[in-house]
Image (cartoon, rainbow, N blue to C red; front, side):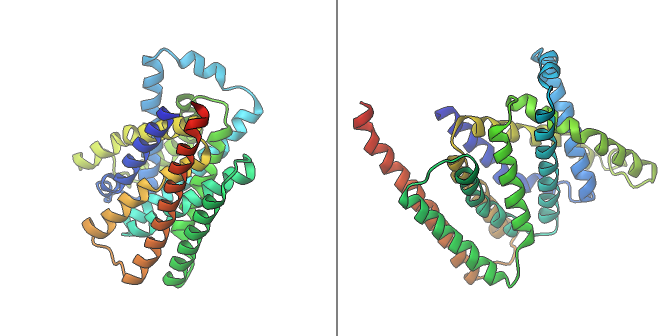
Length: 294
């Protein structure tokens, strides 16, 4: 359990500061950034499997129609989430993307209850209800549905659910996902290169470098997330996810100086209060179990 929590915290801290990296790729079109993330992620994971002498084991583990279908679904969800996030950051919607990942833990908690039959205690339900109220308030304040936030929340919530029940290890699972997406990514990159629209190696050495390392930057937190999803309850994964949007929110407000009205701050405070209640309830619940366990 402790290792799972550490993996989760590490993954979400890296994701929390991910807008800083995405901003370095702003000169490239969003679909090209996505295709490079897929391509270089697979290259990095393939190299890791070779170094660890697990490529043969990976090939043997990729069997069965159910496994292929599960990971095809998770790969498509991952691609949709990545593309939406890239567009959000590079169109100065970092704060709205953070809202998506504030909503995401609610989605993960509810998926855990509905599909995995995880149970919430009364105060946990209260915390979920308060957070939902905060999300509703923010939606009202926006004046329309925050589509970027909703797409990010639902795609990654479903991705986390699949990873919870998927049979492969974190490394093998992510390798299979990127391999499923690899051919379309390469075909697209080849097409834009032939059309003279490709940015990789087109003269901007700095951009080419950042595109090349996007695989490492992408794969490491995903591997850590997958380990966390396997080791701890999905409801706890949902709570840890608040780390990333908090960092993103602070980046959007303090570093990128995106517009943020006092009324929106009210909504964020409501959600943060719900998170605090959830943590406090969990802390006292664990303390109450210690004498019994002893």
